[in-house]
Structures are given as structure tokens and as C-alpha cells.
Amino acid sequence: MRLRTEERRAAILRVAIELFREVGFARASMAAISARLGGSKGTLYGYFNSKEELFIASMMAVMEDQAQEAVKHLDAELQDHVAVLHRFGRAYLALHLSSDALPLMRAAIAEGGNSKIGKNLYGKGCERAWRQVAAYLGRIHAQGLICATDTRIAAAHLKGLLEAGVVEPSLYGAEPWISADEAVVHAVEAFLKAYSPALPAATACLSG
Image (cartoon, rainbow, N blue to C red; front, side, top):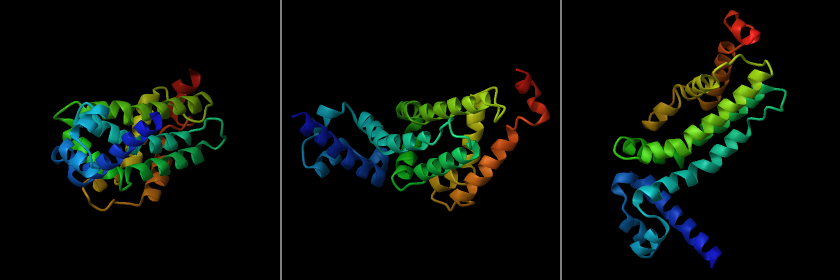
């Protein structure tokens, strides 16, 4: 019985993801999802209390596994932190530029100001992942590889550099300014220059 329940939930998510991707959050309805699934709205509400809850679960189903795969590249035990940041950057952009993620991200952004959906999604997904990035930066800071006394700010800078000229145009349906591979190379280079322990501004970091 448990297996059948999990399979049913997975089937609901597959159909919901498909519909949210096609028409967005506002135009999708529990009735349309249940019709496409071939069941009743009562079945949906047995698994999800609202369309908002189903949308959040759909986003997490698409993003969470891939996000964790990206974060897994952050291995502080590896000697080559430059290669680690490159691998993470490529995985991060591949996730955000995927045909699964982009339409759902657009829907989440569109709804962000109208409900708690955006806040909940951000807290469960993006914010949690970047806290893990900040933790990695803290570990390589402790090894003297970078100077980042506030790893939250450093993580925010890395995020901005990776996304610059790539993610925003893609969300609008426009061509990115540069390729994802180029974005990663230049982002990591700029980040490491800015947080180099050899810079004069890093004196306090080194003495601390």
C-alpha cells in the first residue's frame, strides 16, 4: 500500500510539473491537473492541501535533487579549489538553464509578490543551497585559499558573478550574453581575484 501511495504522489507531481510548465501557476488549476491525471480533485487534496502546496512540491521535485548534485561538487578536502568552483558553477548554471527549471522559475517569480509561495520556495531551495556554498567558502577560507571573513557576502558575490549575463536573459526568453562555460570561467576568475589572500585588503583576514 505504501509503494502505491508513493507512486501515486509521484504521478501527481509529474502531471503538475507538466501543467505548471505549460501554463504557469495562475492559469493552472487543481481541476485541470486532476483531469489530466485521470482522477478526482479529492484525490489531489488527499496528497496536497492546496494548489500552492502542490506547486512548491513540484518546484522542489525539479530543483532539489539537481541542486544537491551541484552542491556535492563543493568538496573542501580536494586540493584544487579552483577546479571545485568550476565544477560547481557549471552544475549550478546547468540546473538554472534547464528546460524543466526555467518555466517553473518564471512562474515562481511571477507569484512571489502575491503569496507566500516565492518566500517558501526561496527558503527551502535557493537560500539553503547557498548557505552550503557559504559553508564551503568558510572551509577554504580557513585553509588560507581565499580571504572571506563574511562568507555570506562572498557566496552572494559568487552567485551574482555566475548568473551575470546568463540567467536573467534566459528568464526573459532572450539569448544569454555569453555561454554558460564562459560565464563560469570568468566568474570564478573574478571571484578569486576579489577574494585573494594576497591582496593588501586581505591583511586583516590574514592577521585574524
